[in-house]
Each structure stands twice: as C-alpha cells, then as structure tokens.
Length: 148
Length: 146
Image (tube, rainbow over all chains, first blue to last red; front, top):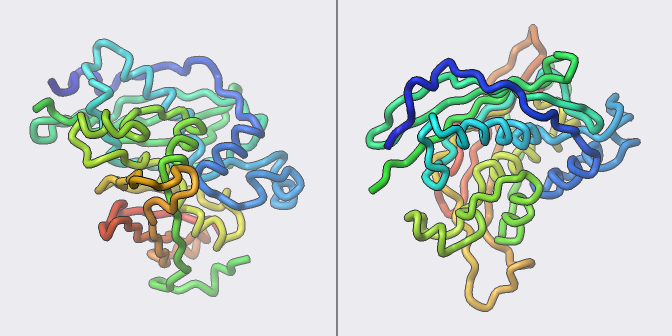
C-alpha cells in the first residue's frame, strides 16, 4: 500500500503548544554531542545576546515530529510507521529557539509521490510562537518502503 | 569570530569526528522522542531487513553540525540546514564490548565553503559526511549568518 494522494494540501492545525525547557535544551544538546556553552549556560547564552540557553540547530525536529505524528496516526494517510525511512530534512530558522519559548506547529502536506513500489511524502511544519511570530520552518520527506 | 571578508569559496573550514554507540542512540531516542525500535532493538531492525541497529538520521544530522557551530562560535548562526539521508549508519554491539563506553561507529565530517552571499553576509558550508566507508549524508548544507 502507498500513501493516499488526496493528502496533498491537507493542513493539520497546531495541537497543544510545546514549552521549550532549559533542561530539554541541555538534554538534547548532550544527546547530539553539541558542546557550545550557549546550550548549557545561561550566562554564556546571554553573552551571545539570547535571553536564555539557545537550542541546537536541529532541536525543532522534536516539534516537527510531534506534528508529523498526527499525520501518521491519521487513518486516512495509510502510512505504516514501521516501514518509514527518513529521506530528507531541512530547517530554516527565522529566529533562534530559546528556553522559555512556547511554540505551535501547523503541519502542511506538500507532496505525495510514487517511488517505485513505495511512496514519498513531504511535509512542512510552520513553527510559530503563540502570538504568531515565525520561528522556524521544517521540511521532511518520509519514504514509505513497499511491503515485500 | 569569523569575518565574512576572510572567506573564500572552496575553503576548508575543518573536520570533526563523532563516535556513536548503542547507548548514544538510546540517549538520542529519549532526548528527541523518536523511539522507533530500528534505532535500539537489533531483532526488530533485522526483521525489517536492516543489517542491524541503525542511528537515527537526525542523530547524524544533529551531531555533525557541531563542526560548523564550533567554527562560527554561535550555534544560532546556522539559519538554514538541510540534508538527504542516503545510507544508514549501522551501529554494532560487538560480543564482549561494554555497551556504554564502546567506541562504536565513527562518523566523519569535513566542511568547506560552498557559496558566499555578500549582500546577505551568509556562507553556505557544505558538509561531506561518511561512516563505515560510505557517504551517509548527501547535499548536507548549512547556511551561516555572519
């Protein structure tokens, strides 16, 4: 089974907001082996002009994958998560994510295409603050491998 | 501090290696919320026709950017970052090894200046990323605001 082509153009509204925590930034930075003091130390972050510790460049994947989870859980999508392979990823930052941010992610299905016996779906998460300021745009393509 | 004027297209900015073992993948799973068992359960990974447990693509992407963050001195200077995932990074669990301090798989990254935009004062850094003698990321590019 592939992916329902009627999904293109669908928008999944933002669910519960994501509260960016200082310890979560430290935990994520440790997990990707990032060493910049700006991820860990508030004073170091302030010296670079941030109000609090700053997130690593790929931190927004946490928020983007939560938004993607809505799509994968949607029975209309026909996506079998156990056959999903991450094909590509992009982050465009409109302003850095820092501890204390409260973020929302609206998910757009931009493309569905057949790839041999499988299919590829491209989604975009528009991440904003609760008051609508643009923070980041993430784009992901997931390849759903065909069943043998 | 990197001066935009000092950069030239093609210039190598440096290289870096990241070691990844099974414990690192469990840590990344917890930190990111991505608990897909192909990243921590060998039996399951093999059942879905993978050679063994593989690293999260996002672990690889997230860890190799350290080269750029350190070079520029401010991780938030990375305003755009993209890649394609071409080959999985297999992370083995050798007989008799200590899973928490085993050296694991080595991911190597080298960065060079791929493009410069004088008006925007940005540099595109192109990253060549390999593991287990294969290129694992393709078109891995970070745009840095200077």
